[in-house]
Image 1 (cartoon, helix red, strand yellow):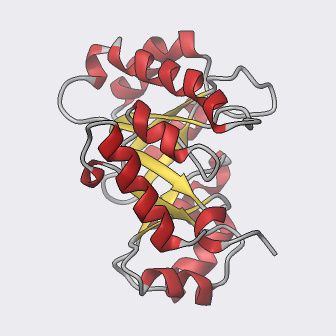
Image 2 (cartoon, rainbow, N blue to C red; image 1 turned 90 degrees about the vertical axis):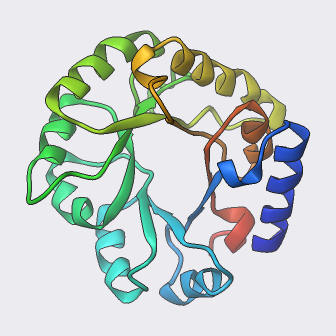
Image 3 (cartoon, rainbow, N blue to C red; image 1 turned 90 degrees about the horizontal axis):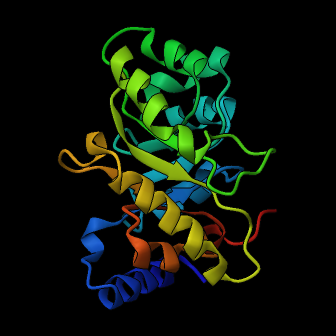
Length: 217
């Protein structure tokens, strides 16, 4: 695959779902990729990139163009928010009070966040339980966080269709919460193995790495 094919498949998936592909943001997940590799994709027109390690983002971002919109898509330790906050367009992995407190500290308005939901109930993954979303969202909004929507990383599927149920769960949670239906909100879901299914279920952001950059070295 490659960047051009991902764009083409996004367009096809959106058309089949009766959606505009312009309503879906592609985040090219560039973790472990070199600055040169990121630049290659940037020069093709891509502007949204995702990282999941604070130190890697802090080292990589200053070497790349200023108009890149950095998305932090991995678990973030509260004591490393200072490395990420000033560079991040959107934090996808907000999931606890200590991180919320750290994110609110610092100069200026903190970047917006997505609430990560553990839709598969996997103990090894970050994110809150689906049933706790209303309560957690309530106190996060009360603290002053700009919560733009929800994010999920479903269990690794044997087939792309296996992710559909988890994507539908995230959509149903979103639709059940009035605070997330007051204007536009984001649903960050879908990666290399299932992004077309995610688009068909309503994803507004997909996070694709391997299909764009190739297998990790």
